Image 1 (spheres, one colour):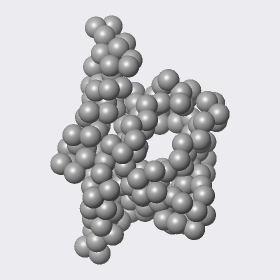
Image 2 (cartoon, helix red, strand yellow; image 1 turned 90 degrees about the horizontal axis):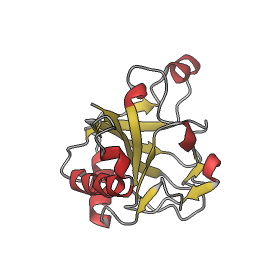
Image 3 (cartoon, helix red, strand yellow; image 1 turned 60 degrees about the vertical axis):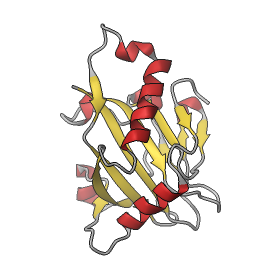
Amino acid sequence: MNKHILHLPKALSELQCKVIIKTFNSKKIQKKLGPNNEFCKKNNLYYYEYITLSTKSPIFANELSEGLTRYSKLHKFLTSAGFPKWKPYEKCNLQKYQPSHYYAGEHCEHSNSQQTSKRVLAWMFYLNDINSGGGGTYFPQQELTIKANQGDLYIWPAGWTHSHIGIPAKSEEKYIITGWCVFI
């Protein structure tokens, strides 16, 4: 594994993942199409359905906090006096991808918009296993493919050095929770 991509296997339990997926699939909850950027809106191009969650949600907040603490201990500069203070962004996305759908463009989580320019780290929980092939994430600059395993948490730098591409799951739905840490 790349030293700047932290992998915490089974950070969420099977039960936690099933509860989160059940919440998403509730008919009472209004879903949006994503990503919600100008290019996708203009071209009517969407890769997933999503709902917005609070990063303080009791179903995963402790596990996220523990993961970020571990990441900070591995990379002490992130909490040094010379580095600006940061925290998890208060909102994150719970996303559902249909079979063969994926975020097709190579991208990073940091850009020139007001919102994304403050991102320091990105993180993602996989909520289900993908057994039919695909479904993971590819980091081309690291030549690294990560597999979609239920409950696994990944944390990585938000910048261009960690651009990534989704990998389509051939015949299964894929569920993730993804979010960011931002400068305060």
